[in-house]
Image (cartoon, rainbow, N blue to C red; front, side, top):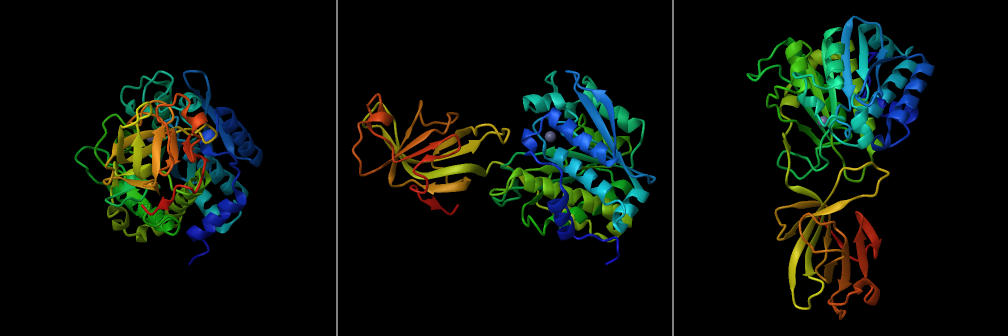
Length: 423
Ligand SMILES: [Zn+2]
């Protein structure tokens, strides 16, 4: 261990003690970002306004370090993919306030880091993937119809960075290979062409990715995946790599039982592990197969909730009942917004796993509004099966108060009455 090495545990502790992001990333608006950036400026970090969105929201670039190696990072080109924006803020705040530490000093002497946090502030405001024109900026690297894409390309072309970090969020139900474990972080060392030609920068990035995987495995073992590497001819990561800036994609998912801040911390650990491994040269001894052998991202097997073996009642009718499972998924929303959970499937859901599962075999389940079917909101009324209920009642909830109610993604009544089961 040299004076420059930093363990993942050291970095986690540094984040715990020193992070300046205080809001859940999904709730960070452009105005909050500006406050964060003012704090960075107050610490002496260089923050520059470099462009505008369609709605004239300022887009900023943060710069730190004076070394010859050029590192470029950008986050939130998809408006509803916010985690890394907060991680970048915390990273710069930490680097600046610890610039006299041996390893941080070396980092700053080795490299110059430029980062664009929140490339798509208009999409962020609407909490949507696309920009205000309705264009996916990450499919606009060639056409350049959006001011945000033009800006990103210009920042790269004028500077020619040696490495890029493209920072996104993936679906919370993405899983690691054939397991039903959430892919909380996925990596992709992006190729620069469809033939998957490798080069020195690409090989280095595989080792850097391996360093990040090794660090994160101490915190989220089994929850790290590899993002699909099909060539995307209009995406930025692929084109950055083609233009001479070999790029690493980091996709943040979710982790059941942990909040968004935990994933901000995971990104913070990943970024500083990557940068430090480059600065010290320790990446050269990393085994690229750690990255290469990560299980690929998979989807379709996991849902947020399953209520197993419920006796599903069709309200308004006395006889129509069936025993089946109800699977539901939560929509991507800001943390402060009401959760919206929709039914994904009804019937035999044995092929799905829920992050949360309930044994509803001793309950009648009725839908609060409409029918219990795919696409409807999961607003569910639970009645113990020993009760006699007139399902044709027009004031069902009033006349026959349910024993438990599941509403807006959580138990509104009778929590713990319907037993949890092990998925
Ligand atoms: Zn994205």
